[in-house]
Image (cartoon, rainbow, N blue to C red; front, side, top):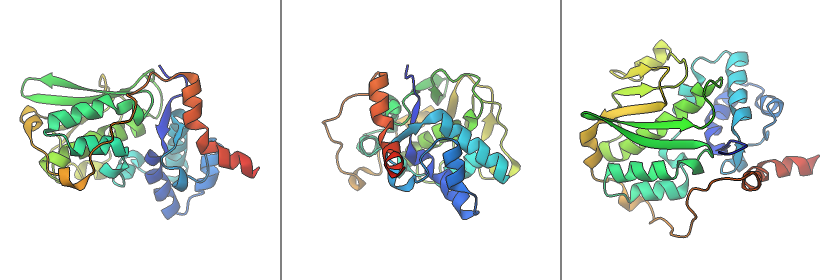
Length: 247
């Protein structure tokens, strides 16, 4: 397991943009969490996950933002996934193949993220979990992001208005009434064994609608690694080097 959990800066950008829009002291909040204060040009770099979660929680509390995780996911898109992952999904012949690619490459989005598919009678669950974080505070923000990307992947095959039958969280999370109104007929569950979305098993055979929109995936890339401390530092340090050079 990774000693320094990392996440891609892309996933913090929606939180930052909301804070900027309401005039919050975004740079101060980032620096207090020991994160780079200028994220826009570093969105494809990796940041430490636990300070990122603390930053989001502190921002929600101090700025009085309700359901910050959900609001941020409304600004995330399929395009926020890594280019290779997007290309593999776009060129998958069926939704099942696309989800298998997403599961295989999950640790390239968050270094401790795992994804898998569980079958249950006539439904399947697309599950995800951050290794070693059981009981950790503020996981609901990460779990919103963990759940929203499988939804966006399914929508590449089922259409932009598709909704899961259920959205589940490991954490003790209850969506606000405003959030529930955006997900009509979707059940929300908490205290689950993993974060997951549920859908009819028949959707797995859906064919692709988006192949022509993406270039074929590149062949030259290593598989998801078993990160050691040196590899993790190499991933994380570029996000901080500019700040250190300015001092």
